[in-house]
Amino acid sequence: MKTWINKWKFFLPIIFLVASCTPEVDDPQMMEDRVKTALFRSMQEWYFWNDKLPQGTNPTQFSSNEDLLSSIIHAPLDRWSYLTTPDAFTRAFTGQNAGHGFGWGFDENEHLYLLFVYKEAPAGKDNWQRGWRVLEVNGKPISSYKQSNGSYNFQLGPNETGITNTFKFLLPDGTEVVKTLGKAEYQSNSVLHRSVVSLDGKNIGYWVYNSFRATAGTTPASSVEVDQTLNYFISQNVDELVLDLRYNGGGSVGVTEQILNYLVPSHANGQTMYTNTLNNSKSSQNSSKKFEKKGNLNLNRLIVLTSRSSASASELLINCLTPYMEVVLIGANTYGKPVGSFPLSSYNKTLKDNNVELVPITFASANANGRAEYFDGFPVDFQVADDPSRDWGNPQERRYKAAIDYIRTGSVHSPGARIITYQPTWEMIDSFTGLQKEFPAY
Image (cartoon, rainbow, N blue to C red; front, side, top):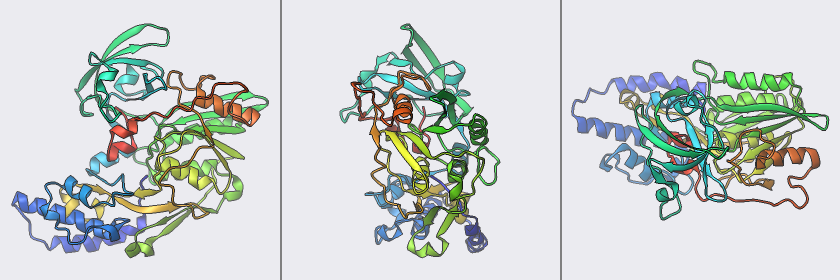
């Protein structure tokens, strides 16, 4: 979950003026030390838990920038602060990726399936589909990649153009196929599926949304895909909406606001969406955002499909809507990230000149009722296991079926039905850190 506040930009001239008085440094070690010092000072100024930073820290004593950051963050709560580059940050938040372009995960039998495929990625262009079972990776069975702690290391290499891997699949029709695929750059789509079904006199929309990514060049940050999708549901006169965030690790707060303004009931127009709180030294810059109702969706409730991979902006959306409408969660408990970040290189010339982007936790977000503490995630109203063997919109896919059953009957389980609440010990989000944890994909 990332945001920028325009009023912070008035600090820039002062920072640049002071930095410009510093003589150039040619010695590489001296420059490394200057960057580490800039990192630590930026954390002292902006970090949400800056009062928890270790006292007496000498940043130049650490072997790398990453080692410094991991050593000073408030580890009991901070699982997200990271380092990257300004370009990588911008590309990720606008969906410019490199890799194969898919996600995968396990069912209750510990069978590995493709969870989603980006249509313009190498996997999408090769017509890979959700529901394909993965039998082997690079000639080795899936079990061989399991580690002693129960997690998996599939050794697919970095997400860089030219890296190649071979996969053996079992397709839904029972045939087996071997695919060798190279990684490449691609533009990801956040909308994985949208559809409308008419049941019992109601039009029910189903929207699988995978990450809160902005369309490049939009100011403020917004998504063309979001506008197209929600206007489609408006044109179809939907009475109910099932929003599938089960693999959505977060993204842009600007895009989250865009979606919220469509979904919120009209009576909430002008009311508080959320309040951001910074650290004590920045409390004068705490701010609130109000709803600006968009479109004529008039939903009394929202059904959200979730998992432990639903994090950050996904949780912000749930939290912001809860004071104004019924929000029903089906699936598994969410991740638990009630805090957010914005990049700091624009506020420090040393970081900017050295192509270092520091993205630490800088604020906490509360909804209109003041709820801001959900580090353990949001508990679901109904536990329903994932069903990766079935494609999006399949009426028998467990979580989607549970949502439809709830809309029709008020219950997620038919009488006598087998209840499956399997929770995998490893999910794809566990294999990623930093920037990629927000947008996990292979």
